[in-house]
Amino acid sequence: MSEPLECTSISPECPIEATVYGYTPSLGLNAFFLAFFALAGIFHLAVGIRYKTHFFGIVITLGCIGEVIGYLGRILLHNNPWSGIGFEIQIACLIFSPSFMVASIYVTLQHVVQIFGAQKSRIPARFYTRVFIAFDVLSLLLQAVGGGLAASAGEDRKMMDLGTNLMIAGIVWQVFTLLVFAALVVDYGVRMRKSWDGVPDDARIMAAQRPFKLFCIGVTVAFATIFTRCVYRIAEMVGGWANPIMRDEAGFVVMEGL
Image (tube, rainbow, N blue to C red):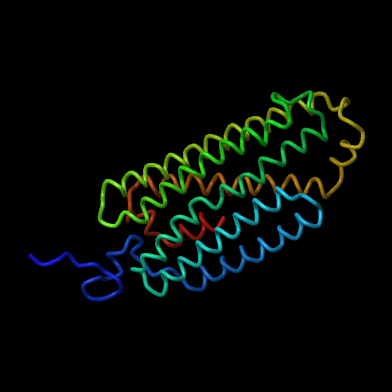
């Protein structure tokens, strides 16, 4: 009996259609996102150093580094869609990198509560960082372990399924955590507005200024895009490897690029 064929490059025996994604990743688009996240990482690191927001700057920078490595993996897949290294790099890094960016959003609520008044918060301000970062770490671990198992499973179907299920569990947990966080943000905002007269004067002045309004818009957009991306990833992974959603590069670019 002949040995099963192990594909390492595109050939008549190993066509592009037989790969997990079923297409050759775009060099231009992936190079663009690689450069974008590289510049974003440098910018946020500089901002974190300049304004001494070290935790905020570090976690976003780590997320950007992960995105850069992930898109480098997709560039390797452009050069060779059967590249095992390219597939492993991009599936692991692009899955869990946004977890670092979510952590930067969580820490902002703690500071907002401290400035506008903790008396209207359901939980102590310091718990926003401690609790949600802990939840985020759990999500990150599930996704990282699952991604590693799935990427290295090869022909081992059981290991592949285990890795996939762990990744899905990690992303579902992340979505749940984001929803709880959003509920607490809305709740705090409503309670604070109802007792606006009790908000410190300097906080009310800051709230009326354009930089703070832009900050709120930026955080909201970041939250919405990461949440949308997580929901997309769940739909992508639940359908199994090489499903139609996973093979749609346009959908990937729009949803993952968010």
